[in-house]
Image (cartoon, rainbow, N blue to C red; front, side, top):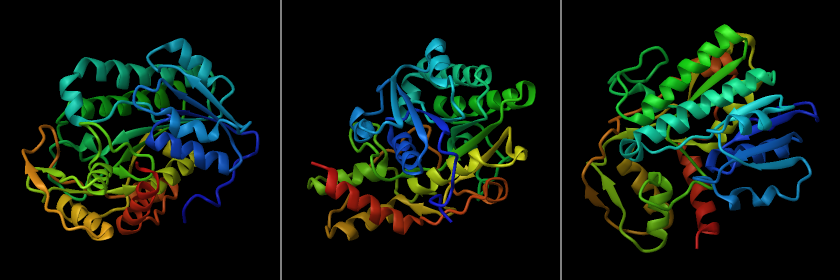
Length: 325
């Protein structure tokens, strides 16, 4: 279980796009610990230099400050690379409703630039981040690949388009691609600041600073919250998956359901505080419930997540306690 026993040849080169972001920086860290060479591509529009400064003295690490919307940058980043872990994207459903053209340009055209660069540079495998948002308005739980509803936001549309393009590159151009549909990932280095911050780090930061958090909606909406270590495992195992996985997408989660109220209580209990939340209006474009069927990931990737929500939330709180100011 986990990924600590995975091995790659010592000269293996990984490109992590969005490597200065939350998930990307965790991937860079894991790969360097496994003895791989890591090239990080990030324009620092949402990622943070501080997330990767800890790797700057490592001779196996290289940082490229660049934008996936620039095809020449993508080509330069892919040269000599064995595996691409494509995490670069702008997230947030509410923000995508305000900026639909940018989400198409960045998330879709940027991913297409990366797919083309990976093909031309003969990359062994292209593993990319998709999202549970592609399930849209389906009310069938657990959510299973092949049973998607209508997308509810430009962000969801961008992720579904990425899956379609990746499948085209696998079918027509021989580039092995694997899509990972992340379900509400949380953990160390996830940004707790700003209007579009994810709910778990935002709650933790506010409660640590004596503030009263806002829950949008009634709090009974549920998510398959997934600790970042599970996502790292999925990415690395996708690189080593058999050819049958090429062109496929897999749900990546732990496989459970936790309501926002349950998340909130878990955090207040762990912090030893008794603060009632404020309830605000539901956010447009948000799905009501998510819960992943992870059988395909288990079968195709050998995915075996061992970080439950309970274990993950304790680790996340410990990290924010030590690192938030």
